[in-house]
Length: 155
Image 1: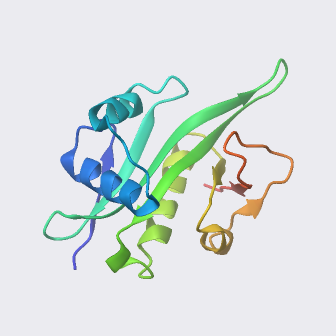
Image 2: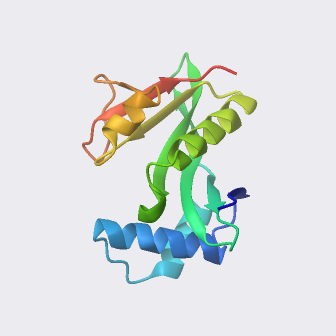
């Protein structure tokens, strides 16, 4: 299986849409307006969404990592951080290092853009993220009430 990774900044890509729909189906999430959801991804007011889409030699999705750069800001400090929004690997491709590869590519993107921290929440893969260098961040609270994980990124 030859694997390629493409950078997505426009969520009209049918390969991404198909993979994202499979991901939500796996989670048991029903969406009635897929076009609206993908439009929201393109127009997110919190920051521009991007994705790394991994495909096989038949151009079918192996997995994806959706992310954005946001800024923590106060009256005195400002710090950009990479927000890992979603990571999904096709069930038949799990355990082969594709998730780790996508994480590393996202981290390189962050570092190349002056971002040296990544943050995420996880309801099903905490051990995976801990193995990949993330640490629990008990002082940070997420709207989804899940535990927050953070990683310092070096360039």
